[in-house]
Amino acid sequence: MNKQTLINIREETQYLLDKAQDAGVRGAINYADLNAVDVRWSVGINGDEIYQVWIEECAPGETNLLKYLYENSSFTDVEYILEW
Image (cartoon, one colour):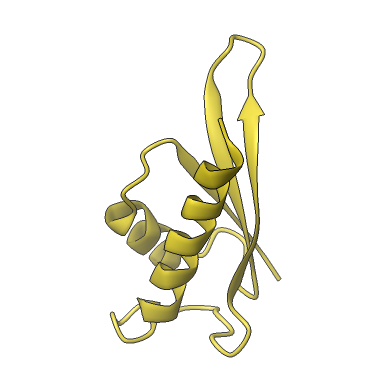
């Protein structure tokens, strides 16, 4: 893990969020303030590693947005956490 990886994940996620409405993603989403606000690197007890991306202004568990992000991200070891 390095800081540049965290920055790259945040920038890509923000890019995808900015394009989501035009891509037809609908749901409980406040597009006016939708932002990737933080990225964290997490290591589990068994040594598994994942990046967690915190996204604000969307209903937690908003399946349409999650599906769009997972299908369009170039990163495979990312978990998106949605919150209002």
